[in-house]
Length: 163
Image (cartoon, rainbow, N blue to C red; front, top):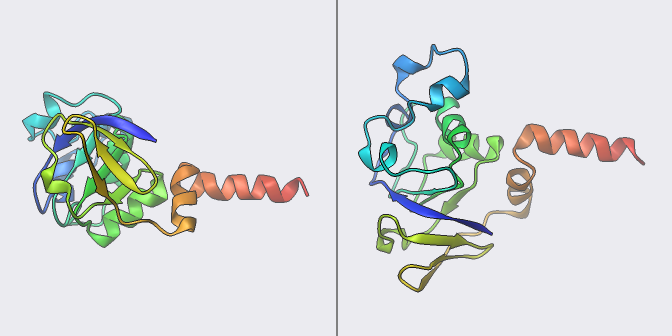
């Protein structure tokens, strides 16, 4: 289960809003993460590690930069829930172990609501409501649970060596 406070965003949040291109020359993801959503006051003023980003349609559109989900993971975003995701952002997030969850009813959740995310639903503790989510295939769930594709493959290799 994932628990956190909702930080609300709208539709078409592109990767340049997540991390501006002018920050991509910084030496590390940790350095870049300080500038995540730098122009969105609801994030800069209210985000704390473990919060959940709630977006609308087409979250993560724009360029295919892997730094966008990486800086969110580095900042401590627990998960991103949206009506839909840009395909490349979605896959980059999964490869990095950042949970991305599709929920058609997400626009009913209000800013700062306390959320709990289970395998098949989102519980809005504040509003005392539940929302269904689009289930990920089992192998994708395993990649995210392992912390991303690199950690998944390392664990798989370690387990194969023990046989």
